[in-house]
Amino acid sequence: MDRKYILIGAIIILMLNITEIIYGQAQPNITITPEHPSPGSTVAFTVEIEDENISEVWIEIQECNGDKGICYPKQNLSMEETSSGVYKGTVSLQHNDATYIQYTLKIKTTVGWSEYFKEAKVTLSTGGVSNDGSTGKDSPGFEFLLVITALLVLFYRRRL
Image (cartoon, rainbow, N blue to C red):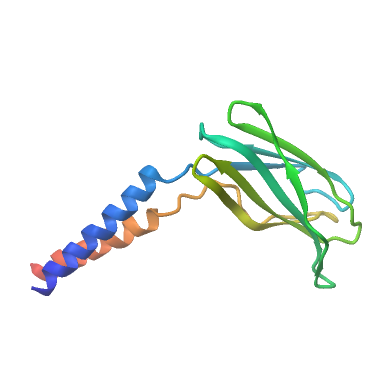
């Protein structure tokens, strides 16, 4: 009887994840130019998203100094649609002592506002630098499919 409940629970979780994947909003792709900006430079953000119901795209940018443990006031940048599904915005960094910037992408659709890349960090260049890897190419939800598959395999192995 317990196996029946485990199987039913696994099927319900699987169905919920498939529904989220099918009906979930498309994850935007963001590009930062230059890839490794320096303090005081101009940074361009390009966002690509496949959603026909977008009415506004904003990016919130904050310069921070990790050595001092401070962040300067946030800048809100409205992004303009340059072609279908492609939005661009440019910001001039103002603080020469900043060691990184963090940004949050905000998109308004008919459903409401959604946030992406919440406070994603980009280390500012003083030579060679990297960012936190938030490229928008993740596939959230698919790890649950692996867990469900493993549970089903385990369940059927014990049965044999």
